[in-house]
Image 1 (cartoon, rainbow, N blue to C red):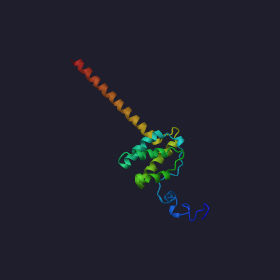
Image 2: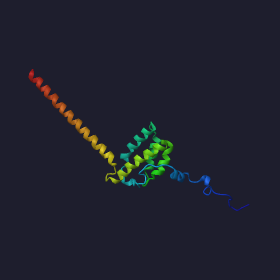
Image 3: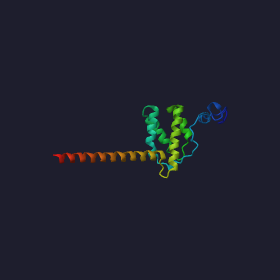
Image 4: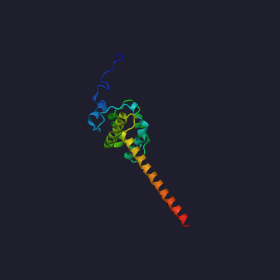
Length: 159
């Protein structure tokens, strides 16, 4: 009987138990732009979370809090690995959708990282457009009020 020595191979040595993630990293198609290293300390994640939730819900066809929370938690690291995140999401979003989602997400994160406020430029442009439209609506409402006031004044003068 041996004194504490094991015979055979360990799981590290047996290629049947090789690192599946390494194989997937080599064999999967990844979205363009995932090579950009993103520092999450420079990003206002709260501004991107609604987009993440909305986009995942669109892709799945229903709201899945587990998948959404998984993405949020994955982005809590300082330098998240987008390829590993894509691999992990593939089971939930299927291969093509996970690639599309990660490509869009990473584009937003890279844009936010480059912006001084930590918000993706696209989101800022959308907000500006929303404010501009709201301003136009308010101006139109003001004009309608003026027209109504003129009508009511002219009617009161006729009486």
